Amino acid sequence: MRFTMGLNLLLLVAMVATNILSLYHLSSTLQSKPPAPAPVPDHLLHQLSTIRATINHLTRLQPTTNTNPTTSKKPTIPSDLLLYTHISPVASSCRDYPDLLHQYMNYTPFSLCPLDSALAESLILRGCHPLPRRRCFSRTTAKLPTSLPTNPFSPLPDNAHLWNIYTCKSFTCLSRLNPELGFDMKAEKSKFTTYKTDLDLPIQQLIQISKSANSVLRLALDIGGGTGTFAAQMKEQNVTVITTTMNLGAPYNEAVALRGLVPLHVPLQQRLPVFDGVLDLVRCGHAVNRWIPVTAMEFLFYDVDRVLRGGGYFWLDHFFSKRVDLEKVYAPLIGKLGYKKVKWAVGNKMDSSGVKNGEAYLTALLQKPVSR
Ligand SMILES: *[C@@H]1O[C@H](CO)[C@@H](O)[C@H](O)[C@H]1NC(C)=O
Image (cartoon, rainbow, N blue to C red; front, side):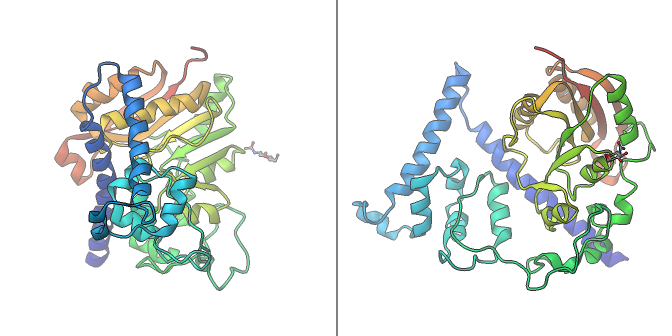
């Protein structure tokens, strides 16, 4: 028992640490920008010059065109990285982690890729996204599952993907390690169905709300959706939900796919990969919280606004922050969107870190104005 608790803690710390690392990267980039008198064009120019500088930086170091003798001491750039930079730009944040990037691009083309999905994950979390493409074959398992589940709440087959990089070698192990991770399908089956506190919004109620507003729910996005349980529950209501999820210490993307749902492997800081006004609902779960720098959060919220159709819903589900910040920072930030507050529930966060930091939860269902 103590062992499991210790592991849980470790896992939590690891998750928090990776998150904070990426967020630290974000905040430090944001803070280091000088205040611009004409924000939009300057910002754009800054972005453009950063991207250009990255490409220049990378291509300048190419041995054949290089005339600077001092660079011979610099680490060799993998040849496939040099080749790729001629085809497509590499995200500007990749430049900040040359060691990781070089390690990632240092592979033998046209053969099996290195077993390095953890490396890819840490680059993406540091803002290096999209990652450069590679010309190698990703690895697959030798054994195929006899059948794949069609019901999104069936137990997940363990032999459908590689476990090499994880301590746990099965979904059962992951559920035992921490039932909250979302791999125990029996536990997942009851999520989003019950109303225990005012912070809950059961799916039946959500559907009722949209029905009575004559607003149809067809297509939604779940940001930071873990193993895809919201999408699974909505599938039973004939609503299509795509789930963004990272593989933070566990095979979340694989789990979503095994459930027959759509996993998008994108970090929180990425522009949402859908067109303007195409979604009826965007849900943000636990992953969106006070650890995200406020400016990054603003960009996220306005991107959510971009992808929502008029009359679409924005659901902040158990968003947590310090209670004072909820009133002083986040409520005004959300208010700027000009959405109708269909639901607004605040409650104390009662776990140990919540009590220690004076944190509160907010569950809000907001409706985008029909026309602007
Ligand atoms: C979903 O669609 C199926 C097939 O059209 C239908 O039988 C079922 O009643 C629908 N479920 C809901 C909750 O609307």
